[in-house]
Length: 211
Picture 1: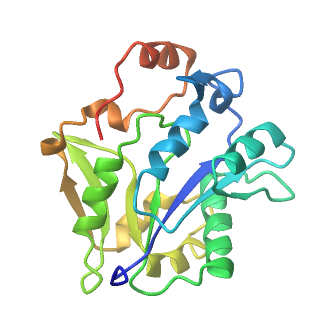
Picture 2: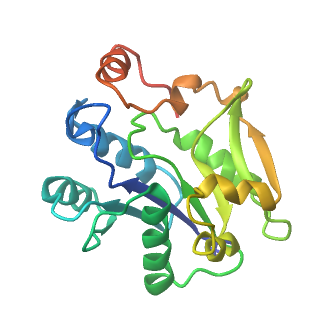
């Protein structure tokens, strides 16, 4: 089989403290496992070279579940203060272990997205043009969501972001395109994350979208 023209890597920041939930939300029951296991199962259906999960130091149960799911786990010696720091850790790991090239991409989505759609990921990968790279954001109707696809070249910009700036700042100075996904019929719940107990309980009552 011919080699794919580029490789894709998923970055899953999972080092938050679940303050709004009041308990470790990624370990909450979901289906036959946990919320994080469902999120990673969806990622594993995608055409990816590697999935990188960043966890807090000492969060052994979460790290073990992620490793059992067959993904790379990064556990730094001190907790990443912000999601941007988790992303930087994952990018550094990829640079050391996978040596991405200019044509490659990284996709980013929160860890608390058990309805993340492989069909949307496939749409983003199909829309990527190595000769004309851009940040790609999926949309359903007027709603923008995750994951977001970034050309690998933008990895170098993360470390140079000003103090207090998040990953969203990459959108301000780089070309980007929206990728409409209405035709995939995955439903807007594919963009939902789970921050509160109410959102978790409501999500449990919804049928997961196809894809």
